[in-house]
Length: 453
Image (cartoon, rainbow, N blue to C red; front, side, top):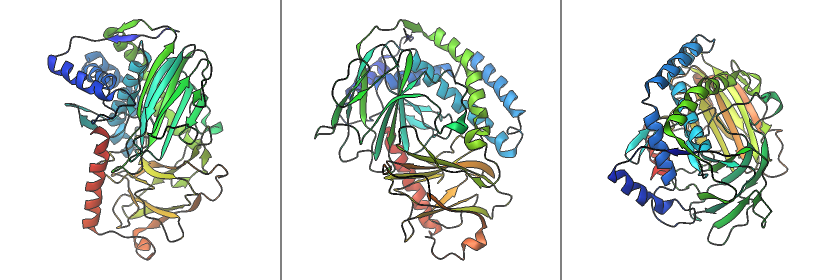
């Protein structure tokens, strides 16, 4: 199977010089200072994205999509209507990255998912989201030909190593969304192979090599299947101040290069694929965990490959004094995370609001459990999940890097609708002052920004 490479218009001398400098961090084993994620391929993709967003026909397609989903039952709700424009913009950005990944002659890892906007490299990229994207994860992906062979070169910064690294090979690309019965599975893809950091053979300096496809070479190997495949990466970094994503690169070692694809062809693919892409993700909340509504919680489900559990809940508050009290058992997981998402399953800006709490940020109870409070207004509780003004929405809980014998039993200990006045009668909950909350929010913003420095 051949895939293409995007041809671009001439770029300025200044941009060319920047790309040359950025190449110093493109190889996974490099020790050079600079943003780990600012590879030449990433910079090129972001500049192409910004160019595509100025296309008049794209704006027409987006307008048609907004009109369609504004007429849906979710689009007619207060919060669904207020968040629709932002959701369409994020889905558009997400599809652009997917198109740019598919239509390359040589594979490259692109940082194509982050619901929180970023300003770096002399430009600003808006949120790039699909559905329930984890603010504690750095997601990267590359598309490969299943009939070829590849190698991934990686290196951990041993002083800032992620809590978990998951690498998986899945069928297909993210430009054409399949029809999936989510009630039978907690993941959206058909996984061909998977490795986590607990499986990797890593050198003393933190470096490693993974072979992909072809004959197996050593312990670090990912098998493939015929056709177009996606290699997906998750770096889990609950400590935003200290941890950094893994240096990674991928290259073909056997197989044919694709043919170049012009900008105009990418643009046409975007026009053709966007409505179907949005239709899938805009309708996904209706089937996620069976379609949660009201103030309800589901049962945790295991992730493909046994690397963790995920759970969902919905909230529907009639008053700013309403809250959900949720207590979880970490279960020995090295990472837990709790995040708010809007009715379209797009996460609010994590640099502006405390819309998520990782295991490195949440305060534990005396018995080791973690109690969270979801509410519109700040109840002064340390583990407050801010809905960012949403009265209706969803939330996701994650347990990752879990003991191999862990089950979903007892992971959720308590779930109830409660009033702020009742929270005030619970002295066991850790509290913060307004000044402490502001300091925490300032610290979160600085920590999140470390991904781009």
